[in-house]
Image (cartoon, helix red, strand yellow):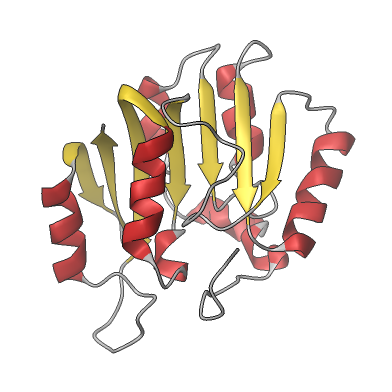
Length: 184
């Protein structure tokens, strides 16, 4: 379950239409996603990207959406029902411990701005790599932060270490976040 220090963002903010003003991470990963894939959306929130991922993998693919906040997950469940989306499986859990997802079972992992809300960054990254199939890829992004001491933030030095510890196929930054496509 989530650590007490983990930060939860209210669903209203996560589903806010103003997010469209931010450069979508889907512009970086669309070329990696194919119909029929099994994708994990780690830190799915109320499903802002889950809906889009579901569409990209099509009815023959699956999306496993995972979030630790019960209220947010309930909103996601309602959204899937209202939109008649049937290829999404929803789990309530922290990204640092993902029960219910087998090792080496996912074709792609999507984790947008999730680890920078957690206190256990390494555990979350290790879990992402555990569930990925050999050779599969993950999109990981973190908020660009100002200097400080919040242990949940991923500061530049830690981000650089993450990129050294994993094989970064692609990497970049927008005005608000850093991102990388990592390969197992």
